[in-house]
Length: 143
Image (cartoon, rainbow, N blue to C red; front, side, top):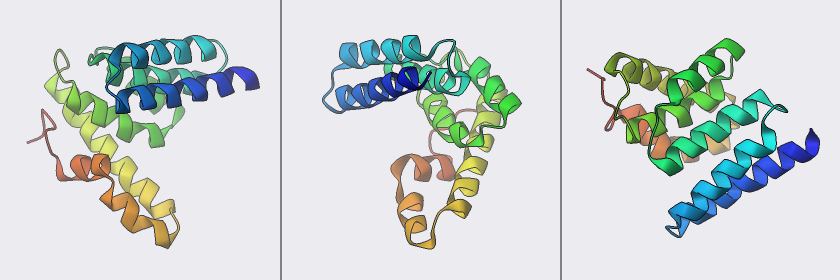
């Protein structure tokens, strides 16, 4: 299981690096490999891998199911990236679910900030994804 988690994390980094240089096919390949590496080994890693794949593919139809897993397991810290990806790729997602995902994501950023050492809180608040989520930028369904 440990080796599968390590391979999964390696593929997440690969997906992020590929996205940084605009290599969408490479990012998608890394995302698929991340999911394959952790299937059956770690539900949390599977959930995060599905969030990564949604970001890479630009389709978020899998996110409501991922959100249900996060809620049932109490994995609050994955709520904010899920909300960001959903906001960036809202097509086909119910407005009410998007609004709820945004609210859970904002609450997660507050929880995470409260657990950070004081010296890191300013950097956390300045993170572009955190800032956009907290400001409600481009979150469909928010009123």
